[in-house]
Length: 261
Image (cartoon, rainbow, N blue to C red; front, side):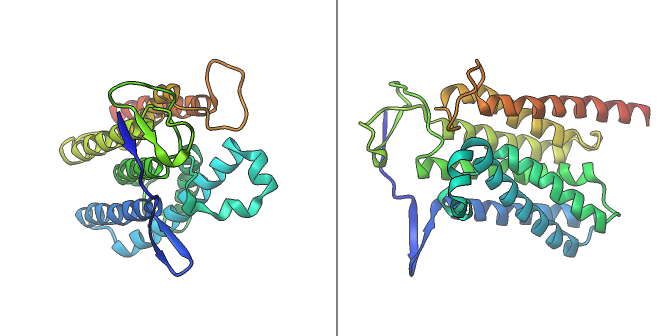
């Protein structure tokens, strides 16, 4: 069992509190930028276009993920307190909304930059996305949010700052982080060594693994939504199903397309 008593605030700049969550989120994007820059250079693409692309991606991710969390998991609270939606630095991003936000952002980017292909770009983006996803989950752990269910085992954690009677829990945020960091390594290796892969293969694997793991790991979490589905599956699992199906269909499509080419 591990006792976690970490102040989620890294430091203060005047009245502004900078949280580890925000630093990890921003740090992930910065690292992701350098990863994408290396891939763009290897393909002789313009890094100036990459700068524009990442602005689209950053805005799409933040808006999509934040609105996804607020409107899917806690709609009653946030619709009654809309100003709270802006407090992204306190945590509260939904991967389902973030994924949709990125796809919309890419669509808008490609309308102005028609020389790039959607599936090629999302394949490249999938690698830093897996990394950023893992870093965000570390941030969730430091924020003591997205909590696991009761678990009195050797790897359980107690978040002292919750003041909830020192309940031991599954460190489910770390379960997800390990999954996403592992996926990052696997996708990077596929990109480097599987040269004859079909375009869209990496993206399909990302979607299947991230949302497939969400379906599995949700069973170790407390319900995040402020309402119940009254079903065997919770909100996060239900939302993950169409993404997993879409990933499988895309995987079949890209292999069929490559075979027929």
